[in-house]
Length: 210
Image 1 (tube, rainbow, N blue to C red):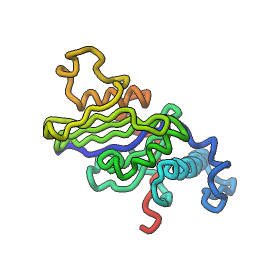
Image 2: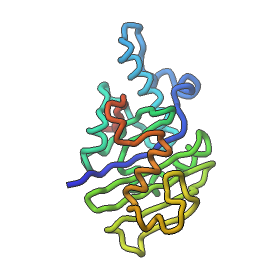
Image 3: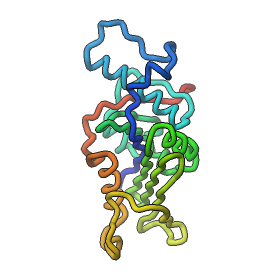
Image 4: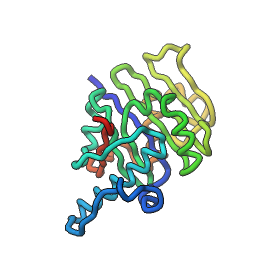
């Protein structure tokens, strides 16, 4: 059947700036009785809230329980909320629409990259063999690649500088499919393969009005 997932990776960990930017009334309450695991989740919820704001995403609320990586990536179109975790000092935001409809959050990607560091946006749709990724740096998109066997040639896009993980040798791009290339790009930026994030602590956010 294939899977549909995507999201954004921000080259920044928002934990250190929570005290500075997140209002006390919005922060997770700490009463001193939490286990280390519960306290870590509350801290991640606060950092995740700041990260979503940095992407200019509308208000969200953190759910009590974390979400598994499988539920955030392997549920296809059924997962329309947000999962936020930290990998190798980078913030991982999972939501397939971020990558599929990049124009809707374009200004957020620009702003976040200007204020906090590079942002890699990615999208996989194994069912239709459609793949897309972008890199934003210093407030601008510096790379865009959209393609796949099911994407009409007229709709393919290949703009900007080559990224680590992309073929650098002339002719090599003809020997590697875009799905493999995207995996390599994400791994190079994140510091590990995305599918090795199974078991990662992920805070779960939904619409504030849900």
